[in-house]
Amino acid sequence: MRSERKEKLRKLTGKIVPQLIFQSAIIIVTAIGSYFFMTWLVADFFGVRNIYAATGYETIGALVILVLTVVPLNVAIYRSRAREVITLSDAITRVAKGDYSTRITAKNPRSSKAIYSDFNKMCAELESVQLLRNDFINSYSHEFKTPIASINGFASLLMEKELPPETQQQYLEIIVDESARLSKLATNTILLSKLSAQQIVTDTEEYDLGEQLRQCSIILSPIWMEKKIEFNCEVTPISYRGNKEMMQHLWLNLLDNAIKYTPVGGEITVNCHQEAGAAVEQAVIRIKDTGEGIRTEIKDKLFDPYFQGDAAHSRPGLGLGLSIAKRIVELTGGSIRVDSEPSVGSTFTVVLPLLR
Image (cartoon, rainbow, N blue to C red; front, side):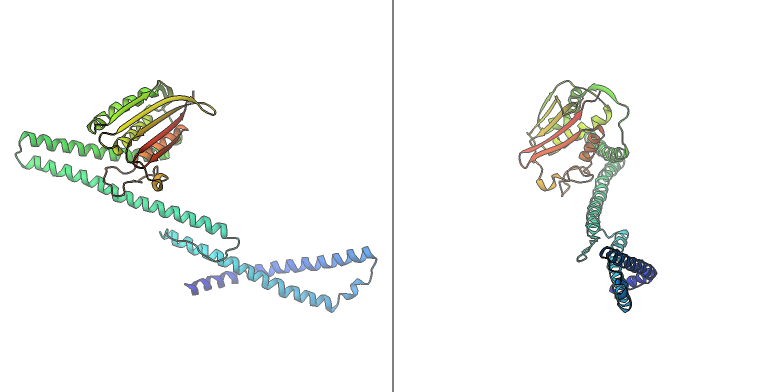
C-alpha cells in the first residue's frame, strides 16, 4: 500500500514539474522586477544615483539563492497537497467499492482538514443508512415470509382434510388476518416511496379535521377495545384544507402506533384545537398514550424509515408508520414532535398551518 502511494505521488510530481518550473520562473521574474523597482524608487527618493553599483555579483548571488529557495519550496508545497489529494482519492475508491466504514485519519492535514471532516461525516451517514437498509431487508423478508407461510399452510389443510366447520372457520379467519397484514405491509411500503418523491399536495378539499380524527378513532376501535384501552377523544370542529386521504394515513399511523405500545387497560387521549400561531392560525393535535415510553437514545431516530425501537421485532411492522407520518406533515408545511418519558408514556404533537 505504501509503495503504491509513493508511485502515485511520483507520477503526479512528474506531471506537474513543468508547471512548477513555470510558476517558479514567474515568481523569480516578479521578485527581480520588484527588487529593481524598489531600488530605483529608494534611489530617486533619497537622491542616491550610484545604488546600481551593487548589482553585479551580489545580484547574481541573490538570484541564485532565490531560485534555490523558490523551486524546492514549490515542490515541497505541491507534494504536501498531493499527499492529501491521494489520501482522499484512496478513501473515495474504498467507499465506491462499498466500504462505508472508511474514515480518513491523516495527521495534520492543512487545507484538507474541513474536507476530511465532511468526508468522514458522509461515510458515517452512509454506513448508518446501509445498516438500516440491511435491517429493513431482514425485517421485510421475515414480515412477508411469515404470513405467506401461514396462508399457504392453512389453505393446504383446508384442501387436503375434512375438517369440522368450526376449525375451517378458524383457519379461514387466520388466512384473512394474514392476507390483510400482507396488504398493509405492501401499502405502507408503496406509500412511503410515493410520498418521498412527492413535493406538493394535490387534490385538496376543505373538511372538518376534528371529525376526521373522530372517524379514525372509530376505525381503530376494534383494536383498542380488545385491549380494554380507555380512549378519550377531545376534539373541536376545525375547518382544514388538505388531501383528505393523505391526512387519514397520518392519523391512522399515529393512532395505531399509540395503540400498539399502550398496555392492556391503558389510556389514550386525542386532543385537537385551534390556536393563533406566529404567522397564521394553526391546528394543534396531540395524541397521548400511557405506554412504555421512548428511550432517549432512540428518540432522534424514531422517524427514520425502517427504524424500529423494538430491536427484537416482537411486534409486527417494518418501522414505516412514523416515517410516513413525518413525511405527510412535512408536505403540509407543519411540524411533528414527540415528548416521552419511559414507563410513563408518549405524546405526539402535530402542528398544521390553517391556510385558506
